[in-house]
Amino acid sequence: MRKKVIIGNWKMNNDKKETADLLLSLLKETWKKEINVKVSPSFVNLENAEKILKNSPIEVVAQNMHYENEGAYTGEISYKMLKSININSVIIGHSERRTIFSENDDIIKRKIVTALNNKMHVIFCFGESSENRNENKHYEIISEQLDVVMHSLTKNQWNQIILAYEPVWAIGTGVNATPEQAQEIHKYVRNKIAIAYNKNLANSVPIIYGGSLKPNNSKEIFSKPDIDGGLVGGASLSFKDFYSIIKSID
Ligand code: PGA
Image: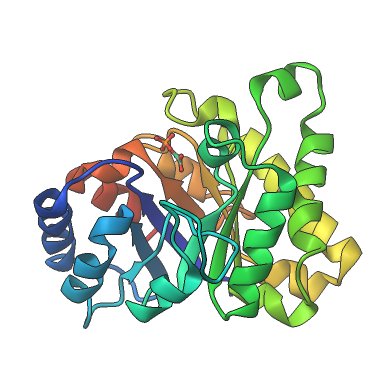
């Protein structure tokens, strides 16, 4: 059975105390051990989060990293720095990085290669804009974005990947993809992997959904056969909502 994954992406929110408070609340709760819960605080809070969660199954994930190992890149963070504080997973390709910070496929590809070659796990985000969908180009766009990750890894490296379908029009808008719309894309992605590799591999890759996941829509979205969990933004900032989303996949 594929693992279930729920990730809280806190983006540029939560200072040191707010981060610690949220984590301490989460630590008091339990859920089935098959559910992999991860949180992604800002860079400055990663080390403290990692210390707080040390003996818990909750994993701390970075929101970004640079593709070079070190050097004159003011303001950037390398995989080496992340690994030195025991952070072994990173989100790459988030639509906010693509649009606000102009990360193109080349940059994204380099980041994936650096992360994977250095034994990091990657949560790879992809998804179409509303224009793409209105023009009926969403499959084409998603396929192109996926090719970047598919051409960057060896067959063995697939176990370092979690795919996150995040339609741009659903991120932070309060308008989630319907369970059917999300399932349709997840199925398409799994099929694409099956064609490029094989069915077994395709069936083993976790594909999670992100975009206005809330306690009142998560259960239905997670009930779809190809949806293995969620990447939660806004709702993960509230302990109550985040925990309720975790429980909805339980
Ligand atoms: P949202 O963000 O849940 O606030 O829509 C999701 C994300 O950006 O990962």
